[in-house]
Length: 69
Image (cartoon, rainbow, N blue to C red; front, side, top):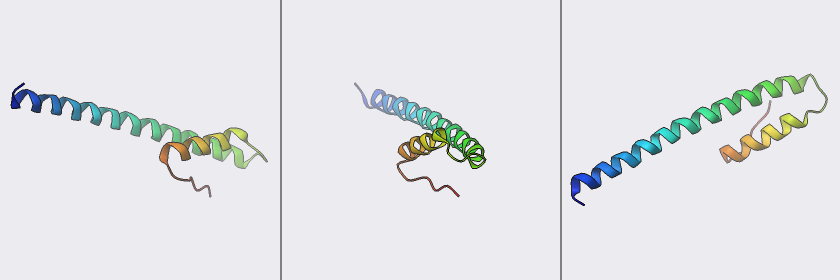
């Protein structure tokens, strides 16, 4: 395999990784919106297990604790 082919393969892999990054960013954005909506609803309720599960899922996805105000 020549240098040109190797560079084409690397370019292909980089493009796929960028596409996956955009997809993951979109999914995280949707989850954050869902969490915010669920959190707003849970403020009106005394206990909301769905909100707590969403907070845990987001924390796991982002690799950091979610601060809820």
